Each structure stands twice: as structure tokens, then as C-alpha cells.
Image (cartoon, rainbow, N blue to C red; front, side, top):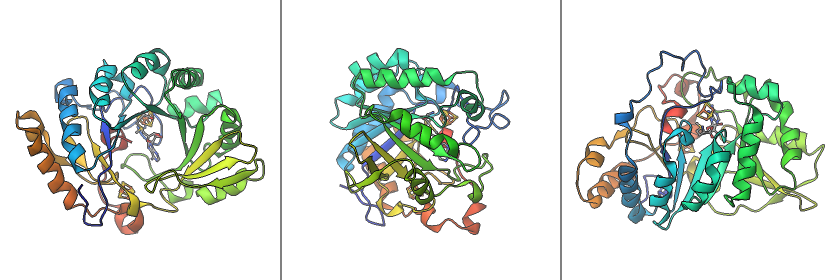
Length: 332
Ligand code: SAM
Ligand code: SF4
Ligand code: SF4
């Protein structure tokens, strides 16, 4: 098992399979920056499923036990179940983060290909606000049907992640809690983060989890739940009547860099050791070569052993001006 300079193991690899998306969420891919003239990765630049599988195999001796497939919108990548089938035999937990707009038609095949769990991003139930936030034509019903399909095919516990932006969607929070209460779906509220350089992030738009919890406690009787694992990023709360659980991910108000065991692989083969990195480690040459997988293990070990990232703990006016990679490229 490998540890970085701050003693953190490598447990979790997030793999972006595309930088494209069928939504234009204002806080992630604002249309004016990701419009018709935006240059996405060409198809030939994307790692093949075999190459992705080799990277995952290379990470397992280093301690990896979980892979999350993400993007962009991962369900836009053709034949995604083939990737799941390849990864599912490797003895790791296999999860997917998706906007769920295409999940209804794919959940069954994904489940039978070995995908374990799905996390769905959903920031509003109100149809009008949903369309404003995602800036597209796909209705919220498509996402809700995708969630139902994931539950039906045992891709659970299904989690719903909601990014809360003050002045935009905080009014949706109690409705999301009520909607999923009693369904087994766990809703988690994430503080709006300063990822990338295109979303015009302002600290004043961050609604701290503590305030959100206090606000919710007026309507719901919530009791704290112990973390399921030492590296869990969400704080957990349950309805006192046993009707379900919610969570808070406080990336801004209460950073968890000390427990951050995640690496990210971009769709074209760059390895990132922090969500706020200004650049990645280019693994393309070694991934594209026909070297033994041990050589990829050594290359990743060399990167991880030098890792000292803790951006969220040192976020300040100085870090604000540093270049940062976009979330839709690096994989959320
Ligand atoms: N398209 C998929 C989806 O939306 O689930 C996967 C990729 S998306 C980049 C992954 C996650 O990043 C989503 O849950 C999204 O809400 C989150 N995200 C994107 N920009 C963010 C920001 N500025 N702050 C917090 N979360 C953000
Ligand atoms: Fe697409 Fe996900 Fe980004 Fe929204 S958050 S624009 S769904 S990649
Ligand atoms: Fe991990 Fe970087 Fe986020 Fe800290 S800021 S939790 S090191 S990804």
C-alpha cells in the first residue's frame, strides 16, 4: 500500500470517460463558456476501455478499493456497460456518478454488467428551476425516472447529490428531503465549490452545511449517524422515525483534505491528485505503450508518493488566482 507525503493512502479513483455533457449546469459548464465553439476532446484522444482497465489494475497493488465512473456525463459514452463488465471482476467497489437523464434506459444493463452503485446529481425538483439550473431541454421527470430505475435494479444505496447555491436553490432543500424520505434514497447536500475558472464562484453563494442543517431541523427531527468508514466525506443524519437518511458534504466550510484518498483520471489519460489542481500528470505515453502493468503501477506510485495537496484547507485570496482545471474535464 502506498501513502502520499501526508500519510494518505490511494483508495479511490474517479475516472472521467468523457468531457462532454448533455446538460449545461451554470456552476459547472456555463453555456457561454461551453458553447458551440468549445473544443472538446476528440474521440481518438479518449482512453479505450482496455486502457482504463489497465490503469485500474495498476492501482490495485497500491491499495485502491473503489472506482467511480464519471465525466462530463458518463452515460454519453457508448457501450459503458462493457467498461463496467471489465472492471467488475477486479474486486473493487464500482460506482457511477451521473445526471441520470439517460439512466432509465441503461440501468438494467449497467447493473447486469457489475456496476454496484449509482449517485445522481439533482439540484432542484421544481421543473422551472431545474431547467434554469441545467440550462437544457431535458425535464426533471427524466432524472426522477432514472433514479427509480436505479433503485429498481438494485444500484443502491442510491444517493442523490444536490449542490446548494445561496440565492439559487436553497428553497429546494426541504422538498428534496421530503421527496426522498422513505424511499431508501439518501440525499446529500454539497457546498458550492470554487472548482474550475468558469463558474464565477463567490464565497457569498456558499451556504454552509451547519446553517442548512439548522434550517432543516425546523421541519425535520434529525439525529446524527456515525460515519460508515474513516474516509467518509459526508456527515450523516437520519430521520428520528427511521424513515431515511440525509448527508452534508462541507467541502468549503469544513474541508476534509486530511482524509482525501482520491485520485482522478481524465478521459485522455492525465492523473490529478486534487480537484483543484492546476495541472495533471500526463500518463498517456505509458498507458498507450504495451508495457507491463507494473510499469504503470510504478509511474502512479511515483506521482502519489509526492502528493501534498490540501487546497481546501489553504483556500484563501492567494489560492483564488491560481489556474484550476474544470470539473467537467477532471471528473467530479
Ligand atoms: N455529469 C455527472 C453528474 O452531474 O453527476 C458527473 C460529472 S459532474 C462534474 C459530478 C458532480 O460535480 C456533480 O454532482 C456536480 O453537481 C458536481 N459539481 C460540479 N461543479 C461543482 C461545483 N462548482 N461545486 C460543487 N459541486 C460541483
Ligand atoms: Fe454536466 Fe454534471 Fe457538469 Fe451538470 S454537473 S454540466 S450534468 S457534468
Ligand atoms: Fe482532496 Fe484536494 Fe479536495 Fe483537499 S481540496 S479534499 S486534497 S481534492
